[in-house]
Structures are given as C-alpha cells and as structure tokens.
Length: 415
Image 1 (cartoon, one colour):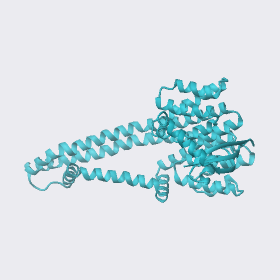
Image 2 (cartoon, helix red, strand yellow):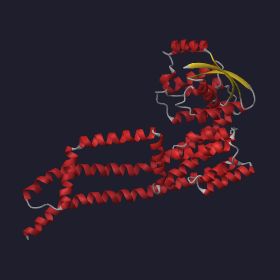
Image 3 (cartoon, one colour):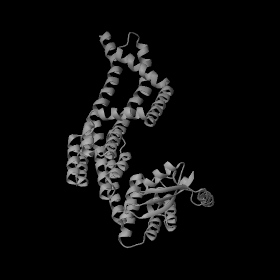
Image 4 (cartoon, one colour):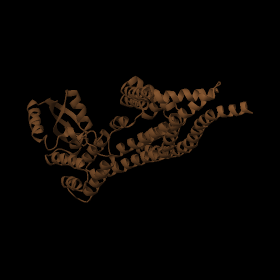
C-alpha cells in the first residue's frame, strides 16, 4: 500500500487535507470520493507511508486493524452505537467523549476495541467518517456517506438518528422474514428426518421379509428398495454432490455472467420472484430517500444506493440509469426504459423530479413497497405451510403404500 496526501473540497466548499492508503492514485481518488470529498490534488508521500508502517508495527500488539475485520460484531451493535452516539451529541456531549461513553457501555470486547481505534483516530484530528472508513466490514459506504454528509452540514446527531431508523427498519424486515421461515424449515427438517429414518432403518428390515416372500415385488416397492440402498451405501456420493453444489453456487456468485443469470432466474420464479423485486425496490427507495434528505447530490446518492441491492440485474439497470442521468437525462424516464421496474415506481419518480420533491416521492414508494413486502411475506408463509404438508404427506404416503403393497398381494394370494 502507498500513502497518498490529498487536498480536497467538502460539499460546503471548505478545503480539507488528509492522507489515504491505496495501490494507485485512481484508487486513492475513489476512496476520497467515498469519504464525501472532491479531490483537487493527490500526491504520493513515501515518508508518510514509512511512518504509518512504523506506527502500525508499534501498535499491532494492542489493536491490529486487520484483526478487527475477522472479529464478530453484530449489526445490532452498530445500530445501537449510532443511536447512542446520536443521543449523546444531541445532548451537547463532545463527539470524542461521546465515543468514549459508548465504548464504556458496550459489553462486547471486540466492539470496544473497534471504538477504541475510532476514538484514537478522532482524537488525532481525523474526521469521524474517515475513522469509521478504516473498518469497511462494519461500516459500509452508505453509512460512511451519511456520516460524511452529517459532518459537512453540522447535523451529525440528526444524521445518526436517521441512520438508526433506517437500520432498524431493515433489521425488522429481515427479522420478519426469518420468523416467517421458522415453521416451514422446522417442518421440512422434521419431515426429512422421518423419511430418512424410514428408508435407512425400517426399509432394510422389511427388505429381508420381502425377499423371503418370493415372487415379483410391485414397482413402488422396488423403487423404494433401490432408494433405500442408495441412501445407505451412497451417502458419500451424496455429500460430495452437496459440496459440489455449494461450490458451484459460490462460483456463480463470483462470476458476473453466472451471477446475472442467477439473478434473472430468481426474478422469474413465480411468487418468490415478485417478493424479491418488491423487497429490493423498498430497500432502494428508502435508501435513496435517506441519502437525498441528508444533502447528497442525486448522482452520488444513486451510486451509493446501487451496492445496497443484492440482485445483480437490478443493480445493472440502475447503473445504466445513473449513466443516463450523468449525461443529462431524466432518472424517471431512464427507469421507464427498463422492463424490470413497475410503472407505478417510474411514474412517481418522474412526478417527484418534475415537482422537485423526489425525496418525498421516494418515501411514498418505500412505504408502499414495504407494505407490499409484508403482505408478500404473509402470503408466502400461508402458501408454504400447506405446500410442505402436501409434499411430506405425498412422500410419506408413497413410502407407506410401497411397504404395504407386498402384504396386500400376499393376502390376495392366500385367499
């Protein structure tokens, strides 16, 4: 890593100086932009890099930043930090003391170490957003952009309160999804366990009885015996196939072409694809609204929002829209060209652009699709429960019938 010294301007027009570590000057400029500054001059400073290396070596035993990236810090701890820091700053507590108070209140030693690092950086005159940027695993670009905007506007307490509200809503949605999936997953695990027990423990014992009976076994019974033998003797191949499937999915996520194909396939799945689209739109609208209300420009807000989405197809479409906007086009009209986004969304955005109240329009969109997401979660839950019961009933019914058919045929022969 090379240390670069930069001269940049804030959104308010003030000039700031600082240093960043990067491989190239282009990467340094990108990091400076993520901090919310517009770079004017970037110059390499090897002396600074040497000094930083010595300082890092001297402090590595007490607080290595690299090790922090491997420590487990929950999302709820980051949300609680944002809420507490907002309350303390609003009460008139200086930011340095506020960070120290939050650190003392934390019960997690890992989070205490992280806050101690942030506290030391702020104490040395580094802005909070820059100090947090040293821990990108826990503070994503969206978080950093909002904090930087709050520092520039002098409303850091309000910005942190907005961040807290935003994160709580996202965590609430994820919590509802997890809660809705508990019963179907429990039913699936129980059903799968019952089927495995019947095929690996009960069926082998019945196979001996069937072989003593002689005669030609019914087709369902023969199929069941083959499946039972495969599960008892081919479990190693099953594990290898499962590992291969997991590795293939991981490779598909890293491969851009395969990741795009997977994202397109997910959107086309009946019922589930609609749920994913609604959830992504709700997250996109709520995030963009928050960034615009925090004072970020529309271009920077969109570029910061795009990585928040998990679906590659939607991210690519928004990237095209952002490029059209940079060339002087309309964001709403560009969205309308895409086949992925609903007409309701594009119409409201176009109206918001025309009226100069895009943030309010995005708030309405987010509220609408958050409600739609809630209804979709309830619908999926209501659909999955009877579907799981039906599937498990059919499988168990087939197994029972296949076991009993030879007995019925023997009874008919005896009569």
